[in-house]
Length: 219
Ligand code: LAC
Image (cartoon, rainbow, N blue to C red):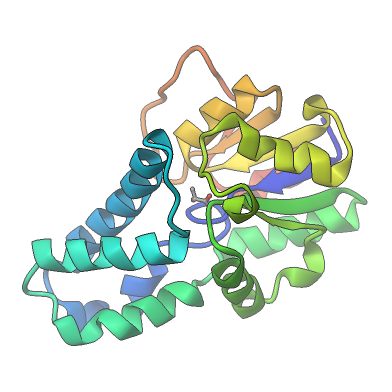
């Protein structure tokens, strides 16, 4: 396997449901449904705007998606909004993410992030998780003003590491993100944390893992 490991951020290294996790008791019975709608709409806005040739940074889309999700789940107190946004800015990393990055770096590999996240929110999450020292690059689509899965975005990786696509192992929990990165020539690991059925059969990953703890064996 290659020696450059690049990770998707949200859902792969950082737990997108950690924000609601910090406020679940106050959010009430619709907490998890609201968090699911929040994530779904955040992604949908990134795809639809990109398809239409527009761009609004991911942090703004995250807030608009939260507004929508809270409107759909009116029992979640509106007073939680600012705290949920603050929690999203400082999302928790999955425990296996921190350990995997440390092991890959100790084995001499290069590591990095390629994310839709805006630079400020990526910095917030990386700093909060204390993983900056184990990353050789934090790449945001913001420089291109277009979101995944536009293929141009994935070229940020090969440009940054001055490498060929086959030198990159791309690790993502988003199956659609794996689809595009396979199609541009990366080697892919799909992190199927939620045990979802497979999709995109024409663009299969090299490996499917339940979490990041098995990355050490690959690296
Ligand atoms: C990201 C989103 C797609 O980090 O999870 O790019």
